[in-house]
Image (cartoon, rainbow, N blue to C red; front, side, top):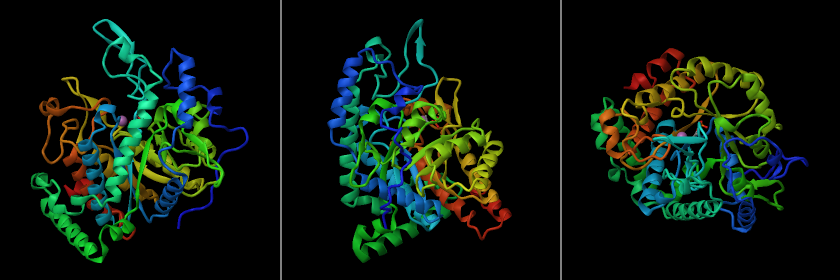
Amino acid sequence: MVASSTATTSDENWSPDSWRSRPALQQPRYLDEMRLAQVGQRLRELPPLVTSGEILELKWAIAEAQEGRRFLLHGGDCAESFIDCTNEIIVNRLKVLFQMGLILAHGLKQPVIRLGRFAGQYAKPRSSDIESRDGVTLPCYRGDIVNGLDFDPISREADPERMFQAHAFSSLTLNFTRALVEGGFGDLRRPEFWRLDWIDQSPSAVEYRRAVDEIADSLRFMQTLGGHIVEDRLHGGFYTSHEGLLLHYEEALTRAVPHRGGWYNLSTHFPWLGMRTSALEGAHVEYFRGLSNPIGVKIGPTLQPDDLLRLIDRLNPSDEPGRLTLITRMGRNHIEQALPPILRAVSNAGRRVLWVVDPMHGNTETTQNGYKTRRFEKIRDELDLAFCIHASEGTRLGGVHLEMTGEDVTECLGGARSLDETDLGRAYKTTVDPRLNYEQAMELSMLIASANRATRPSASLDERKNLSLAGAL
Ligand code: PEP
Ligand code: CO
């Protein structure tokens, strides 16, 4: 069932370091180049984190999703931090991802590919290279793989040694995650242990309680058939991802796999290209084009359809199934103008992609008291509109991309508990972007599961609009 073909986009002009001759945006300036080279050399010798077999399995699953037979749930932290590599945080993060996966699989009636934004999500693109506070200016924080968050000159200096720590913390995270997944993950399979008090605050409480009861029944039934092995067959697997941003690190973890042919980034199953680094002639596109991994590309509201088609040609010239996932992050206020021309251009060109919506990154705002936040209602509306627009354009929305955590943080506004601006200070912990907390993430997956009933091909557009997410509230 797993694709054995290894069609790649690499050619003899490509190598893991061919990006070095192109302009590389969003890279730190390392003062000690000799040490940087030594770190790169040692990283090249260290064991990888994932295998090419797993990567091809994910590519096959994404190809299935492109055909409408699976749904992709892509979620996790905006930025992982070394200090958050703890037992509790890893367990809670995986739990919320898997619980959401069950809700979606139940509502969508198809397997859900669970793709974590973790075990390597340590590098961040920033809107400015510097940060000033009280007359002092320092380099910006670029994620724990590059420098420290503390606002002092030593912590903010880019340190190549941090790449070793990132590799080590990624492997600790992945090792424990794999053990949890393979061990069946205890109370995950028993919705009576899920934290669902928030449901009673929701206008859709009755519908949500019914969905949870049905999930509990089917899980009990599956246990009688053979425990988690049966359930895992019904699910779409578990994989890791991170933004492929820090090219020195990505290059060092890119390995030739002789028995398959081609080059694989073995630090993750699924690297993605961020919106700020997807210039056609830039270093990141050069690096990504030679990989055999399935890859994601973030698409913002200013990308022109023709430029997107050129990018698709560069990244997937042979239209290989499963290779390309396009993650649109337009924002509630832009999606209606920006998404349809992009969908039409790709459909008219007959290109094969998986469409995913990221309703987080186009909806970030700063409150009067200085918190970077996102409103649950805007996130929900962008999702809702994305489902409707895809349905009316005849394309399929095959996944969602969310920033979320299993913790009780207060970073996004709204949701069933109606968090407001005064709540934000209570548990605002993110180092970069605001994440949905456990309850908000669960609520959103209930909304997606019920919205999808509205986007079945048999439903008319009017029916779909009536049953859309906003209508479900
Ligand atoms: C992110 O996913 O955290 C991110 C920075 O996204 P984008 O590239 O879409 O801005
Ligand atoms: Co983010």
